[in-house]
Image (cartoon, helix red, strand yellow):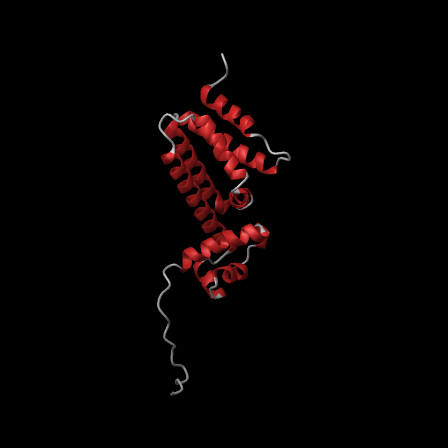
Length: 192
């Protein structure tokens, strides 16, 4: 086998079109394992099984990594909500369905819920992330408005996010009936 000449360039392997997306998913996983403060290019590279230079090539700063992780988490969350809503019958009791959804997020999907809120709340201290967090809010408002109206959609989005945060932190967690009562009030208004 002939040695390469000094200064000769080495041929690169095939392009990895999934690398950027894999790095984004790895950033979410690092936040899940270590929190926002544990997010580093090195940790993400190890999680994604890519060279460190790949993470810095695609995402120069930690804020860039956080932003792509926030976008990825938001897209996954909104996609899952759309699938959930599409599976609901048109005449479903929306308040009861929302309560059941929240219970799923704070029980079976607790880890994902915590990661999503870590990323979402990071925008409070990182102005570069605010646009991504606001876009997530708007997607939720639009989503909830499809079953109700735009104003109630905004109210439900705020209630949904607030309940998830409160319920994830509460000990003991609220019951499904308590959560349903809140959604019912938001949708139906005060009792006569």
